[in-house]
Amino acid sequence: MKLLHSGKVRDIYADGDDIVLVASDRLSIYDVVLPTPVPDKGALLTQLSLWWFDRLADIAPNHVISASDVPPEFVGRAIRCRRLSMLPVECIARGYLAGLGLAEYEKHGTVSGVALPPGLVEGSKLPEPIFTPTTKAPVGEHDEFMTFDEVVAAVGAETAARLRDLTLAVYTRGAEIAAGNGILVADTKLEFGLDPAGEIVLADEVLTPDSSRFWPADSWEPGRAQYSFDKQYVREWSASLRWDRTPPGPEVPTEVVAATRARYVEVYERITGEDW
Ligand code: ATP
Ligand code: MG
Image (cartoon, rainbow, N blue to C red; front, side):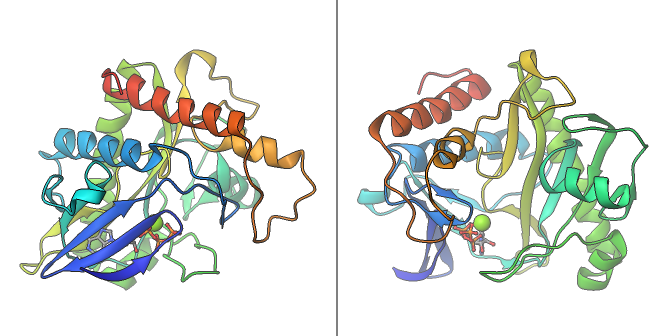
């Protein structure tokens, strides 16, 4: 297989008409990959994505071909996928206000041109889930919010409307299932591509802690930062160092790695209801 692209966390290989997406145990914070891996992280993210693809298959066709037909050294953390022509939009749905969405709202009162009521705070539930697409910036640049009209200009009116509807439908299903297990999905990022017949296909990873903000429902409280099942623990630990957030990243101590792994395992088990 030919290595097409090595991202911060995943490696993408071409194999004939297919790609093989391999999730590593690498962890990045502030866009810097840390030298210390988190054991099982790649497998946890891969298995969670597969679990979701199954539960979303009636909403959108997906790129999965096989989780077993991959080189033996990658089994468990790799997926053989249809190679698609990716659409140049990061399809984000938000049900709660946090992160860049919150920053944009505080500046403009809108996110991706969607007007929101005044008085919302960090962690607020939105009146209804909204579609807040962004550009897919090249390495080193930041993604920018796109208005719906900008998505129309990029992919055409029909495809733009489909992307919005699919993104909100996936978010709504995902949030419903997660809520049943005590997890709020604050927001999530999806990527879609076109197959050779021109059909829109759900690709990349789905509803993982790397692509979504997951909050425990029982401690949700608007007006402050929420406990989040992601790399927050590592970010907080790194704040105690004198590190300027440029490469190389710091070695992560064993106990911080263990606590981070435990968090990824916990969110997998809570969402799926299955033991890791
Ligand atoms: P980052 O390190 O910031 O995440 P990245 O998004 O480029 O960078 P990955 O997420 O590791 O890196 O790589 C996944 C890449 O594969 C993305 O560019 C994504 O658009 C692309 N991709 C996902 N699914 C498919 C598919 N079925 N066909 C073609 N490309 C795909
Ligand atoms: Mg990516």
